[in-house]
View 1: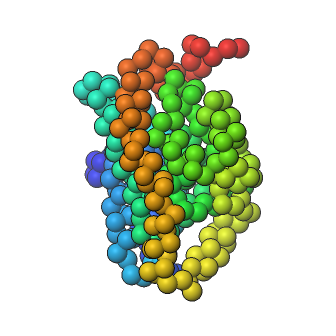
View 2: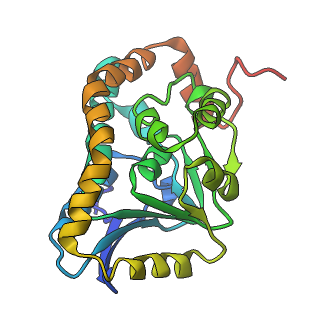
Length: 262
């Protein structure tokens, strides 16, 4: 089985919810082409699953999502600008699919969330995280901008707190993430908390859920659609710069980049 054929997003329907699980711990559930394709397919399946009232997006391993698969990006053929623009548009499609999903989507995090993974969490309607979770927008430390990710985050997170995350790349814990709006709640027992939240949807009308979610999602979808090409262009431009080349190389070589100060 080739990497592209491997099942790295798992689907299970039980207890009134569709459990969609990122299962690529070898690369910290990085956003690869295969992961995006399989996650989109799982979301489509959940949309027509009559046994599921809600979708729970979880993960295996100690990382919910590490962001873009930089090893895949560095191995891509074609011009860096074209490849970056294409990857960004694919990622935009994934964010839209979560935001526009007809059923509520709950992020269930019990590990680390970085860069593009923050966009996945912010695109979900609700987000819970356990005590081992941490969150960071690390793009600034690679010479990149959190372009597409900034749109759903801006809809959830306090402006001053988001500025600090974007401009420093600092890491925060689940309690702080809940305080500023990244999360719905930081919890001690993630499994129990997710179960309680799923139960809360049992009295809800499927039609009512769909219509109310659409009302909430409309402004964010409009912003993603209005700025998608612009933000894809930002990412594409930055991927051609020497600083991003150095940042990605330093990351893959597990060393500080040349601009890091002592």
